[in-house]
Length: 312
Image (cartoon, rainbow, N blue to C red):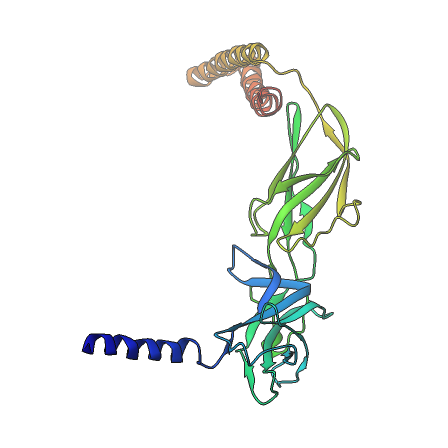
Protein backbone atom coordinates (compact mmCIF):
# COMPACT_ATOMS: atom_id res chain seq x y z
CA UNK A 1 0.00 0.00 0.00
CA UNK A 2 2.83 2.34 0.90
CA UNK A 3 4.52 1.37 -2.35
CA UNK A 4 1.43 2.34 -4.40
CA UNK A 5 1.26 5.66 -2.59
CA UNK A 6 4.88 6.37 -3.52
CA UNK A 7 4.15 5.63 -7.17
CA UNK A 8 1.20 8.01 -7.12
CA UNK A 9 3.36 10.75 -5.59
CA UNK A 10 6.08 10.24 -8.21
CA UNK A 11 3.44 10.37 -10.94
CA UNK A 12 2.09 13.67 -9.65
CA UNK A 13 5.63 15.10 -9.51
CA UNK A 14 6.28 13.93 -13.06
CA UNK A 15 3.10 15.55 -14.36
CA UNK A 16 3.81 18.77 -12.53
CA UNK A 17 7.29 18.97 -14.07
CA UNK A 18 6.53 17.66 -17.56
CA UNK A 19 3.10 19.15 -18.22
CA UNK A 20 2.81 22.19 -16.00
CA UNK A 21 6.41 23.39 -16.32
CA UNK A 22 6.97 26.76 -17.90
CA UNK A 23 7.41 26.58 -21.66
CA UNK A 24 10.79 27.24 -23.20
CA UNK A 25 11.68 28.46 -26.65
CA UNK A 26 14.51 26.61 -28.33
CA UNK A 27 17.30 28.59 -29.94
CA UNK A 28 16.61 29.82 -33.48
CA UNK A 29 17.14 27.33 -36.29
CA UNK A 30 18.56 29.11 -39.35
CA UNK A 31 18.22 27.66 -42.86
CA UNK A 32 19.81 27.28 -45.31
CA UNK A 33 23.17 26.92 -43.63
CA UNK A 34 26.48 25.24 -44.27
CA UNK A 35 29.68 24.55 -42.36
CA UNK A 36 33.13 25.13 -43.79
CA UNK A 37 34.88 21.76 -43.19
CA UNK A 38 38.24 23.49 -43.01
CA UNK A 39 37.33 25.99 -40.27
CA UNK A 40 34.25 24.43 -38.64
CA UNK A 41 32.48 27.81 -38.86
CA UNK A 42 28.76 27.76 -39.68
CA UNK A 43 27.49 30.16 -42.33
CA UNK A 44 24.09 31.02 -43.73
CA UNK A 45 22.85 33.13 -46.58
CA UNK A 46 19.86 35.39 -47.18
CA UNK A 47 17.04 34.91 -47.93
CA UNK A 48 16.81 32.72 -44.83
CA UNK A 49 14.10 31.04 -42.79
CA UNK A 50 14.31 31.32 -39.00
CA UNK A 51 12.12 29.36 -36.60
CA UNK A 52 12.02 28.46 -32.92
CA UNK A 53 10.05 25.56 -31.45
CA UNK A 54 8.14 25.91 -28.17
CA UNK A 55 9.10 23.10 -25.79
CA UNK A 56 6.81 21.74 -23.00
CA UNK A 57 4.11 24.21 -23.93
CA UNK A 58 0.76 24.33 -22.16
CA UNK A 59 -1.92 23.84 -24.84
CA UNK A 60 -4.16 26.48 -23.29
CA UNK A 61 -1.41 29.10 -23.21
CA UNK A 62 -0.61 29.31 -26.93
CA UNK A 63 -3.20 29.80 -29.63
CA UNK A 64 -4.01 32.01 -32.59
CA UNK A 65 -3.76 35.05 -30.32
CA UNK A 66 -0.10 34.35 -29.49
CA UNK A 67 2.49 36.76 -30.84
CA UNK A 68 6.12 36.38 -31.96
CA UNK A 69 9.04 38.76 -32.45
CA UNK A 70 12.64 38.48 -33.54
CA UNK A 71 15.77 40.58 -33.27
CA UNK A 72 19.01 40.67 -35.24
CA UNK A 73 20.78 43.15 -33.00
CA UNK A 74 22.12 43.19 -29.47
CA UNK A 75 19.87 46.01 -28.28
CA UNK A 76 16.59 44.01 -28.22
CA UNK A 77 14.94 45.93 -31.04
CA UNK A 78 12.14 43.48 -31.78
CA UNK A 79 10.42 43.04 -35.15
CA UNK A 80 7.28 41.06 -35.88
CA UNK A 81 7.45 37.36 -36.73
CA UNK A 82 4.60 34.82 -37.08
CA UNK A 83 3.28 32.30 -34.58
CA UNK A 84 2.32 28.99 -36.22
CA UNK A 85 -0.32 27.47 -33.97
CA UNK A 86 -0.26 24.05 -35.65
CA UNK A 87 3.49 23.57 -35.11
CA UNK A 88 3.95 25.75 -32.01
CA UNK A 89 6.71 27.68 -33.74
CA UNK A 90 7.82 31.27 -34.10
CA UNK A 91 8.50 31.57 -37.81
CA UNK A 92 10.26 34.14 -39.96
CA UNK A 93 10.30 33.32 -43.68
CA UNK A 94 12.65 34.80 -46.27
CA UNK A 95 14.38 37.24 -43.97
CA UNK A 96 16.74 39.47 -45.95
CA UNK A 97 19.59 41.74 -45.02
CA UNK A 98 21.87 43.33 -47.56
CA UNK A 99 25.07 43.11 -45.55
CA UNK A 100 27.42 40.19 -45.15
CA UNK A 101 29.12 39.49 -41.86
CA UNK A 102 28.04 38.16 -38.50
CA UNK A 103 24.59 38.55 -36.93
CA UNK A 104 22.86 37.69 -33.66
CA UNK A 105 19.35 36.23 -33.72
CA UNK A 106 16.84 35.96 -30.90
CA UNK A 107 13.11 35.19 -30.89
CA UNK A 108 10.35 35.97 -28.36
CA UNK A 109 6.85 34.44 -28.07
CA UNK A 110 3.93 35.81 -26.08
CA UNK A 111 1.20 33.51 -24.79
CA UNK A 112 -2.39 33.83 -25.95
CA UNK A 113 -3.40 35.76 -22.86
CA UNK A 114 -0.81 38.44 -23.61
CA UNK A 115 0.60 38.45 -20.10
CA UNK A 116 3.83 36.41 -20.39
CA UNK A 117 6.74 36.44 -22.83
CA UNK A 118 9.23 33.62 -23.38
CA UNK A 119 12.51 34.06 -25.21
CA UNK A 120 15.60 32.12 -26.20
CA UNK A 121 19.26 33.02 -26.11
CA UNK A 122 21.18 34.82 -28.80
CA UNK A 123 22.46 32.70 -31.68
CA UNK A 124 25.58 34.04 -33.40
CA UNK A 125 25.93 33.14 -37.07
CA UNK A 126 27.90 34.27 -40.11
CA UNK A 127 26.37 35.14 -43.46
CA UNK A 128 28.08 34.44 -46.77
CA UNK A 129 26.46 35.99 -49.82
CA UNK A 130 29.52 36.18 -52.04
CA UNK A 131 30.30 33.61 -54.70
CA UNK A 132 33.77 32.02 -54.68
CA UNK A 133 36.41 33.61 -56.91
CA UNK A 134 38.71 31.36 -58.92
CA UNK A 135 41.78 31.47 -61.10
CA UNK A 136 44.12 28.91 -62.66
CA UNK A 137 47.66 27.82 -61.96
CA UNK A 138 50.34 26.44 -64.28
CA UNK A 139 48.70 24.35 -67.01
CA UNK A 140 50.25 20.91 -67.56
CA UNK A 141 50.27 19.36 -71.05
CA UNK A 142 50.37 15.61 -71.55
CA UNK A 143 49.89 13.14 -74.33
CA UNK A 144 46.19 13.39 -75.23
CA UNK A 145 45.01 15.55 -72.32
CA UNK A 146 45.68 18.78 -70.47
CA UNK A 147 45.30 19.59 -66.77
CA UNK A 148 44.12 23.01 -65.55
CA UNK A 149 44.67 23.47 -61.78
CA UNK A 150 41.88 25.74 -60.51
CA UNK A 151 42.36 27.71 -57.28
CA UNK A 152 39.16 28.99 -55.65
CA UNK A 153 38.50 31.10 -52.54
CA UNK A 154 35.10 31.80 -51.03
CA UNK A 155 35.85 35.36 -49.98
CA UNK A 156 33.50 37.64 -48.07
CA UNK A 157 32.98 41.33 -47.40
CA UNK A 158 31.69 42.79 -44.15
CA UNK A 159 31.91 45.67 -41.75
CA UNK A 160 35.16 45.32 -39.81
CA UNK A 161 34.12 46.92 -36.52
CA UNK A 162 34.43 44.86 -33.37
CA UNK A 163 31.94 41.99 -33.25
CA UNK A 164 31.19 42.37 -36.95
CA UNK A 165 34.68 41.34 -38.06
CA UNK A 166 35.23 38.32 -40.26
CA UNK A 167 36.94 35.16 -39.03
CA UNK A 168 40.69 35.24 -39.47
CA UNK A 169 40.53 32.59 -42.20
CA UNK A 170 38.22 34.68 -44.41
CA UNK A 171 37.28 31.59 -46.35
CA UNK A 172 33.50 31.80 -46.16
CA UNK A 173 31.35 28.69 -46.27
CA UNK A 174 33.92 26.90 -48.43
CA UNK A 175 34.10 25.85 -52.08
CA UNK A 176 32.04 22.77 -52.91
CA UNK A 177 32.22 22.47 -56.71
CA UNK A 178 34.26 23.72 -59.65
CA UNK A 179 32.15 23.92 -62.82
CA UNK A 180 33.58 23.99 -66.33
CA UNK A 181 32.31 24.00 -69.90
CA UNK A 182 34.47 22.82 -72.80
CA UNK A 183 33.88 24.45 -76.20
CA UNK A 184 30.47 25.77 -75.04
CA UNK A 185 29.36 22.25 -74.18
CA UNK A 186 27.35 21.22 -71.10
CA UNK A 187 28.58 22.33 -67.70
CA UNK A 188 30.30 19.65 -65.62
CA UNK A 189 30.70 19.78 -61.82
CA UNK A 190 33.95 18.60 -60.24
CA UNK A 191 33.98 18.28 -56.42
CA UNK A 192 36.45 20.75 -54.97
CA UNK A 193 39.63 19.11 -53.72
CA UNK A 194 39.47 21.22 -50.55
CA UNK A 195 38.00 24.38 -49.04
CA UNK A 196 41.61 25.50 -48.61
CA UNK A 197 42.24 28.13 -51.32
CA UNK A 198 45.87 26.97 -51.55
CA UNK A 199 44.80 23.49 -52.77
CA UNK A 200 43.89 23.34 -56.49
CA UNK A 201 41.15 21.29 -58.10
CA UNK A 202 42.34 19.70 -61.35
CA UNK A 203 40.21 20.03 -64.48
CA UNK A 204 41.11 17.44 -67.14
CA UNK A 205 40.54 18.48 -70.76
CA UNK A 206 40.68 15.80 -73.47
CA UNK A 207 40.25 15.75 -77.24
CA UNK A 208 42.95 16.78 -79.71
CA UNK A 209 42.85 20.40 -80.87
CA UNK A 210 41.97 23.83 -79.53
CA UNK A 211 39.64 24.26 -76.55
CA UNK A 212 37.65 27.18 -75.21
CA UNK A 213 37.15 26.41 -71.52
CA UNK A 214 34.82 28.35 -69.19
CA UNK A 215 35.17 27.96 -65.43
CA UNK A 216 33.19 29.04 -62.35
CA UNK A 217 32.96 28.01 -58.69
CA UNK A 218 30.13 27.20 -56.25
CA UNK A 219 30.18 27.42 -52.46
CA UNK A 220 28.41 25.21 -49.89
CA UNK A 221 25.42 27.54 -49.84
CA UNK A 222 24.91 27.09 -53.60
CA UNK A 223 26.09 30.63 -54.35
CA UNK A 224 28.08 30.51 -57.59
CA UNK A 225 30.11 32.68 -59.94
CA UNK A 226 28.71 31.10 -63.10
CA UNK A 227 26.90 34.31 -64.15
CA UNK A 228 23.98 32.56 -65.82
CA UNK A 229 26.21 30.12 -67.67
CA UNK A 230 28.83 32.60 -68.83
CA UNK A 231 31.36 31.50 -66.20
CA UNK A 232 33.76 33.47 -64.06
CA UNK A 233 36.70 33.24 -66.45
CA UNK A 234 37.72 31.31 -69.55
CA UNK A 235 40.92 29.92 -70.98
CA UNK A 236 40.95 30.49 -74.72
CA UNK A 237 43.06 28.65 -77.28
CA UNK A 238 43.95 25.93 -74.82
CA UNK A 239 45.56 23.13 -76.79
CA UNK A 240 45.43 19.38 -76.37
CA UNK A 241 47.92 17.43 -78.47
CA UNK A 242 48.08 13.73 -79.28
CA UNK A 243 51.73 12.90 -79.85
CA UNK A 244 51.08 9.27 -80.73
CA UNK A 245 53.16 8.01 -77.85
CA UNK A 246 53.27 4.25 -77.38
CA UNK A 247 55.35 1.71 -75.54
CA UNK A 248 57.18 0.83 -78.79
CA UNK A 249 57.95 4.47 -79.59
CA UNK A 250 59.24 5.09 -76.10
CA UNK A 251 61.42 1.99 -76.18
CA UNK A 252 62.94 3.12 -79.48
CA UNK A 253 63.69 6.57 -78.08
CA UNK A 254 65.21 5.03 -74.97
CA UNK A 255 67.48 2.95 -77.21
CA UNK A 256 68.56 6.11 -79.10
CA UNK A 257 69.30 7.84 -75.80
CA UNK A 258 71.34 4.80 -74.71
CA UNK A 259 73.43 4.97 -77.91
CA UNK A 260 73.97 8.70 -77.45
CA UNK A 261 75.15 8.11 -73.91
CA UNK A 262 77.65 5.55 -75.22
CA UNK A 263 78.98 8.00 -77.83
CA UNK A 264 79.29 10.74 -75.19
CA UNK A 265 81.24 8.43 -72.88
CA UNK A 266 83.65 7.37 -75.65
CA UNK A 267 84.25 11.01 -76.70
CA UNK A 268 84.85 12.02 -73.07
CA UNK A 269 87.28 9.13 -72.46
CA UNK A 270 89.23 10.02 -75.62
CA UNK A 271 89.52 13.63 -74.46
CA UNK A 272 90.51 12.52 -70.97
CA UNK A 273 93.24 10.25 -72.41
CA UNK A 274 94.82 13.24 -74.12
CA UNK A 275 94.81 15.27 -70.90
CA UNK A 276 96.30 12.39 -68.89
CA UNK A 277 99.07 11.76 -71.44
CA UNK A 278 99.90 15.47 -71.55
CA UNK A 279 99.62 15.46 -75.32
CA UNK A 280 96.47 17.50 -75.81
CA UNK A 281 95.57 18.16 -79.41
CA UNK A 282 92.69 19.79 -81.21
CA UNK A 283 91.06 16.39 -81.60
CA UNK A 284 90.96 15.96 -77.81
CA UNK A 285 89.38 19.36 -77.27
CA UNK A 286 86.86 18.60 -79.99
CA UNK A 287 85.99 15.29 -78.30
CA UNK A 288 85.47 17.10 -74.99
CA UNK A 289 83.14 19.59 -76.67
CA UNK A 290 81.25 16.81 -78.44
CA UNK A 291 80.72 14.92 -75.16
CA UNK A 292 79.36 18.07 -73.51
CA UNK A 293 76.95 18.73 -76.39
CA UNK A 294 75.81 15.10 -76.31
CA UNK A 295 75.01 15.38 -72.59
CA UNK A 296 72.86 18.46 -73.24
CA UNK A 297 71.02 16.67 -76.06
CA UNK A 298 70.43 13.60 -73.90
CA UNK A 299 69.01 15.69 -71.04
CA UNK A 300 66.73 17.59 -73.43
CA UNK A 301 65.40 14.43 -75.10
CA UNK A 302 64.83 12.71 -71.77
CA UNK A 303 63.04 15.65 -70.17
CA UNK A 304 60.90 16.77 -73.12
CA UNK A 305 60.17 13.55 -74.95
CA UNK A 306 59.46 11.35 -71.95
CA UNK A 307 57.31 14.00 -70.24
CA UNK A 308 55.14 14.45 -73.33
CA UNK A 309 55.13 11.48 -75.65
CA UNK A 310 55.75 8.75 -73.13
CA UNK A 311 52.92 9.76 -70.76
CA UNK A 312 50.60 6.76 -71.22
